[in-house]
Image (cartoon, rainbow, N blue to C red; front, side):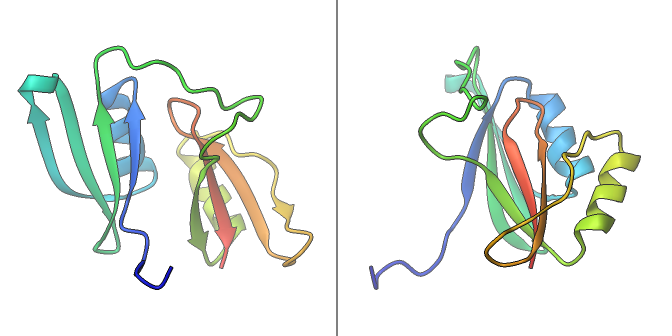
Length: 129
């Protein structure tokens, strides 16, 4: 697979655009690159960056079907962010009223990690880099 350079972005479809926009920009503090309303699709597309690097597209569509997360279903599992200090992330998220799973330790790497859920229940992991 020598032709793949890097992961370009991740796309997320949300059920409530304003709620998810607030979550990704205010809670996770991703930066807005561009916001477009696509009238023909009755859909918003929000391009988000992390430290200036484009990483996520947030889409809204009328009445999207739910995607099962619990119990775990086949398909893409979660979005993971590398962090320097898992405990600091937990404290910051809890101050913002976000429920955080207990911190665990990866049995193979010895690194700490934890999960939260976005407004639609998408698992988001914070993994010590």
